[in-house]
Image (cartoon, rainbow, N blue to C red):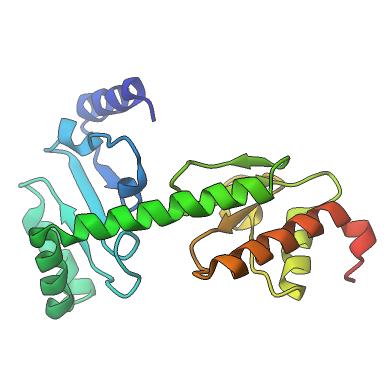
Length: 212
């Protein structure tokens, strides 16, 4: 969002006394850090962030900054639903944050994402992609010769897992696109090979492939 858009949202939230829930789990990937909208309406905003994306999938803990008037309600709700988050995991997370190591680890993840995006862009050049330079994913628009669900099935038959746009649909129609996760393959040679297989599949077309 642009700065103007974020300011406008904060103005509307304050005017109509709305609750803001700001999920900032991927915010660390922004190359240019942006101030949380919650900072502009602290009495109405809940800011959520965590370490599972920035540090490690195994470190599944998150933090919520809540309005002072709602902190007690939120704590009671957490106790009623999950009883008690794992204290050891949060102690480890807090130690990483206090020492500054968490920020270095998040920066390393950002650097890996940037490299993966660069490789994907070179192999899938000519394709229409929506992406950010340090994002974990990219949105790939498909040629007319493919439908998203058909391509996802054909890719699966070649041991590639991609997500059809239909999984992310909120309206009656969705884009003819797939979402690619770029961080699940650590070995660069395997990563390049998978993207090359996908590029070849895109050129083939569903009519030629004939997987039914």
